[in-house]
Image (cartoon, rainbow, N blue to C red; front, side):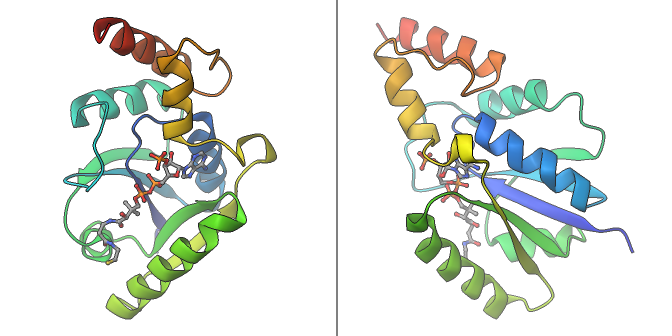
Length: 162
Ligand code: COA
């Protein structure tokens, strides 16, 4: 049986911390489906199309990746894609409560789908999309924290916003 994992998130925008988890996930699974959540409660800086474009550019050298978007329950989407795992990165202790809660809820909703956690690389432990956006908004150096295409799009976006 093919081992397929879903790596879900908002990816507003994708960071090197996400890429690190995806790369390591690709070594564990036959296929990793990077799935961008639609209709989240969050106020996004980038549209769905922009987020998918940046992911596509950043992941283009990885063969066993599929890019997609999804709405509704994650476990329903996973089942539809024949995935048996959800891949999540764990950064700092503060992630634990939320991740644990989500993993338990997903398990209650569908026992066939396992949540697999990878510890974030040390370099990315304290990064997040929001903190990187905040730094970029005020002209801070975000080089090496995001793929080149993301750095470019962030600069473009904040320039356009004045
Ligand atoms: N490196 C750097 N940053 C990371 C990271 C890593 N390895 N992993 C996560 N992050 C950051 C993200 O950039 C994001 O930052 P932000 O809040 O500043 O934007 C933050 O951690 C949250 O991560 P994300 O992975 O995008 O999670 P989310 O909370 O936005 O979405 C879903 C989580 C999509 C898995 C969840 O909302 C979901 O499954 N929704 C569908 C409905 C559902 O089934 N719910 C669960 C059962 S009720």
